[in-house]
Image (cartoon, rainbow over all chains, first blue to last red; front, side):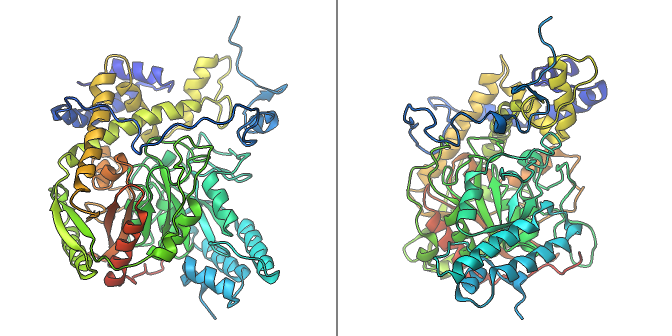
Length: 100
Length: 493
């Protein structure tokens, strides 16, 4: 499978990355070279093989269902959470107007 | 007077503990070395005052007769992928420029708790995506090494290129690295130092800027195997804040270290003998076999039949995870915001990400977005995950025949900066020998084997069973003792 400029524009839009015409043109052969190369995975017989998402067997743990079980990842950190926000206002993240 | 910058982790720690010198003297010497090495561009932000502060605390503890930690008095470099409270953390990107974490990553906190100090935040490939340290927003890192009789700037490898350069140039005795598909081992091999990626889950990922979460793993880079064992012991440990953290005790790798490999079987995978592999690398592999045999090990031929598919599977899985992980950079919560006059929310996202990400990062996000998109998910992503299962199964089957695997770390030695930047695929091939162990989550280490005819370092890679960092380190030590690699780059910076 290969991608054309229109497809790359669509992917860039899904990924929320603005790209000009020149950038899209440049990206088409680069992405196609990579996609051509990964195509070889199709040769592998994967009959009966389950897709692997976790490599080392490890059970998911549940933490105690209490507030602030670990204070570092608990609540009550509004100012710390907002400290690096480009536009924090009135204790919230500021964004451009989204509702007319 | 001791030249402190020639000392490694153990020598510094023991010297400070014995009162041969103070931690402060050591920190001052390394701060000066960092300051004088700006031509290497290894550090994004030096933090001399933090190195001094940590050293003074260690000296005061010693004066007070208190017990000292495993890294007490050792100033280290911190890859700028680890969140450090109060110190800018960028992942070498523009989108995180100026980001000052309100919290400390678990791994860095563990190191400070063990008595280490921070010389600064080390340069890297942007978001750890690269194999040459040429994708950083803060400029290329130069290797301290040069080809004999030339002046061309060479790649320190990537993504932990600031780490490898700093340790090889003796401006840090050790540094943290992270390895997603070779980012500790390949730069270690390029610069003639040691580096180990432990079993996936040994080191907490909490506070490490995420690239591909099912692969990312932190580890130490230093000039000796023993120094790596000490530092890995300080970095590793269970962390409830990381859902994939291993709930296991951390063995005392340092004290159990032994280069006696009697009874161990070393597997030599035939599929790693690939076209295009440098002759000098193949020769060093043969030499490595002889060294391990000399250490008492038995050499056995093994097969890892899916080796050639590991790299293409990686270049689907890692970008897929990256495209998801990097969705968080939206110009709202932290980092850069690019909001043109009158623009709406969606425009702000797209403008911010266009301005904030470098070309390689964009390329990988696009690949990841594409392989996860409706209609292509099964053909690419699910298929890659199945191939990953087969790569992991190859290793499981190999463990029936051997206890560890010996292979080259890289197919070539370092290359001049700029020589591969127009060709992403050739660049990706740097990690062809490193990626299989990453996909399988296995502990793997690179140790220096010697110099090639151009005078550039070559590394040998040891891959071990899950949780068996000890055997990996032991074999590393056996190679180190026999290789007698004492070469250092000639100072030009």
